[in-house]
Amino acid sequence: MKGSISRRDFLILTARGAGAAIVSYGLMGCATDENDDQVVNNVSFNHGIASGDPLANSIILWTRITPDTEAELTVSWEVAKDQTFTELISTGNSTTNASKDYTIKVDVIGLEADTSYYYRFISHGVTSGIGTTKTISNGSPDSVKLAVMSCANYPAGYFNVYNLAAQQEELDAVLHLGDYIYEYARGEYASENAEALAREVLPATELFSLSDYRTRYAQYHSDPDLQLLHSKVPFITVWDDHEIADDTWRDGAGNHNDGEGSFEERKLAALQAYFEWLPIRPWSEGNNEEIYRHFAFGDLVDLYMLDTRVLARDQQLSYADYFDGSTLFDEQTFNQDLYETERNMLGTEQLQWLEDSVSVNAGRWQLLGQQVLMGEMKLPGAIALNAMSSSDYEELGGLALLAARIEASDPTLTAAEQDYYAENSDKLTADALSLLSFPELPYNLDAWDGYATERDKVLAIFNEKNLVVIAGDTHNAWANELSNADGSIVGVEFAVSSISSPGLEYYLGISDDVIESTENGFVSLIEGLKYSNAKDRGFLTLTFTQDKVESQWHYVDTILSDQYQTLTERSTVASSLVNEPALILTTD
Image (cartoon, rainbow, N blue to C red; front, side, top):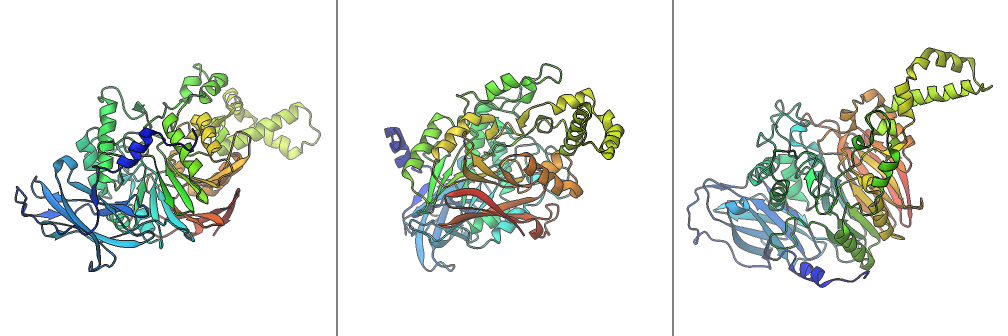
């Protein structure tokens, strides 16, 4: 029943966090090393500190300790309202060991809403750096400001985007939409400059075991820019595919091949490492698979972090399965499979949770934090299949139109048009004409376009709500107006570029001199698309007020040097007014 909470849901909600993170209730005394069974000569906090999953009265604190010898380590923490830690709010101590990869998570409860705090960890006489964090409002905030980012590939370049985000003022939280790490081996995806930048991945092999994933997380957490951002702002995270393997779905992945062992074992190892190394509040002890959850920023924003990847996703469709060995595309069978009513992205249980949650939450704005593009992104089939560039499609389409006009003896044909056709008609080969006849197709079957029926179900949940969707995954920035099955605009989508992973400029070989015309071409070809950035690395900020939501994209000019500039000339602002989902764009 809509709005109801089942017994199972109640048990999950009441058990959430129980035993999975140390609970800190307040002032509990200082840590000592008197009960340590083993002597540790030296420890260090090489991987920084972090906070996450902020609520109005609690927040997760995280760190990882590096010992000089394997041992059971005592760790204490301090939370204060002042940087000198004279006004302590919460203290305590616990232990960690190799079974937890020496990570420790503390759920500090009993805090004040909408309040900033300082925190630090201490172990064996060594003190970590000082972090700042913030609880969220439980009242009526004037505004909520969030930074949104995804897709950080360590060997591709420096994490300048994290550094730029750390300079933002008055952030309430960072929303990380996945691909926090990448699983590839050394020398593979986007690694052309890794050796020169001293950013070759560890371990050198592709990630399969728990030890592999832990080692890669440790390398990422050694990055100074990631450490800086984690130390300043609480994160709210969700995974995408590369935390496990490329194009992950419920029972497999595009980058998990025969001879690579059990995918299930690989997945569980990857998810365990994720929960160890990220400041995320688990549902319950040992539950590393359920990650969807809700955050209420007072009565202004209800945030739903979804899992579109692991729990229920059916395998992605592949265009290769709909060709008969020639250039003939089986459109009928493709559409039957695409619009299959039982085709899942979220799955029945998560979808029901979302519907129940939305029915009882009354935030001014409803925000979906999830991984992949929700806006319908259909392109002419020849372009969607990467068989033809947009410029070639435009040229050949123009020639085909001229051919039809000539055949019909169109009296409006000019001499210049006839001369142009005579000089270029040889380009209209049989293969080119076949490609031009392809129907419009989704450009990315790994996104919601590949799960269209369930997308309609999600959008229907937010009928007459102020819906905002955010997405990552594509490594490029987009702004979409979201339409339901009837064609009515029901929400907006802001999609973020990547932190360092290459985008369409890399895959399609788009040069700088045509990048803007290519972006404009996407906007003109795709209904509902209002903005595209096909080149730059960056993040976006979302600012919610009672009257509107505003998204601003922030870009850096390079990731190949740790000295960078902000690309202010490429910055764009998009906004939507309350009860008016149409997008308004402003380019600086």
